[in-house]
Image (tube, rainbow, N blue to C red):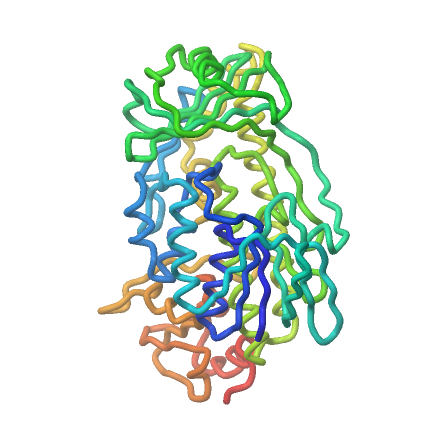
Length: 454
C-alpha cells in the first residue's frame, strides 16, 4: 500500500511511522525546508504518553522535558493530575520540536521518505487511487492520502472543504524566556480584567509564556518586543518573575474551527487540518496525535486486505466527536480565563473551586484534559495491565491487535498478538477495547474485527 501524508509535524510523523512499520510505502510532503525550532505546542498529556509507550518511545520523550503533576488555574484553582489512572500521572512539558525529532527518527528508521519544500497544490482521486500534486510540479500517486498539514492545509483546500468557525482570541503573545524568579510549584495561569498570562517550565532553564492584553489588540504581524510581554505578565501576576533573555517571540490569534468530514473518498484529514482551537489546556498537539493513532492501524488494515466493512469510516465516527469535545473544553477554559469583570472572575473562582472538590467532577476534568477519560462509543480506553513479565502496552508495540485470554486462536498470526489471561479481551492497536466476551464467542468476534483467518 502506498500512502502520501502532507505535513511532517507530530501528527503526520506518528502516522507515517505507524504505516511504515506495518509495511506500507509512505511519502511525507513537508512545506518547510528544515526542522523549525519555532513551536506553540509544549504539553504532552498522559494518554499521548501511553500511545508513545505502545510504540516504545515514551522514555525517550520523557527524557526531554519536565513532569508536572498539578495545574493551577487563575491563581487559586488547582487541578491534581497525580492520581490519574496511568503510568504517566502528569503532563510532560517539552517543546514540540523535541517530539517531532523523536517521531521523525522513528519514521525514517521504518523507511519513510520525507520530501521537503513540497507544498500541496492539488489532489485528484478516483476509485483506483489518489494523486497529490505539489506547487513545484511534483506528482505523488498513492492508494490513500492524509492531510496533516496544519490549519492552512493545502489538502483541505484542494478538496474544497469548508473550515467553519471563528477567532476566539486575537493578539496572543508567545515567548520563550529565562526567569530569574520563576514560579516554584506548577504550571501557573493568572488573569485580571485586562490581562491574561500563562507560565510553564521547559526544565532546561527556559519558560514558555503566553500573554494577552485586552487593551492592545493588534494584527499578528505587528512588531512584538519583550517589554510588551513583560508588562502584560506583570499586570496579570503582579510580577514578571525577573523576565530576562528571550530566544523566541511570536504573536498570533487563536481560532475555533472544525471541518465537517474527516474523510473524502481516499483522502483523510488529521490534526490541525481537521480541527483547531485555543491553546488552553494544551490539547492541540495531543488531539492530533490521537487522530494519527486512530487512523494508522485502520489504513494499515485496509492496505493488508483484512479491514472489515466500515472500518475506515469509523475514523470519522470516533474522532470528529472528540475534536468537537476539545473545542468545547479549550474554548470554555479560555473564556473563563478572559472574564472581564471582577465579580465574574470571583464567581468563576468560587464555583470552579467548589466543583473540583467533588470527586466525580474532578475525575471528569482531569480525564478530559489528560485524554484518559476519552472513550469511543464501542471502544473504551484499555488501561495498561501487567501480564507477568510483560505489559499490555509493550505487546502493542507490534502494531497489532492483542488478544488476552486462556487460549490462542489459529489463523491470525499476521494481525494478532496473544497473551494468557483469565478472561478474553481484544485490544485494538490504539489501546482501545474492541471486544470482551467468552471462549464460545472468540471466533465470531475475531472475524468481526479482524476479518477471516488466513
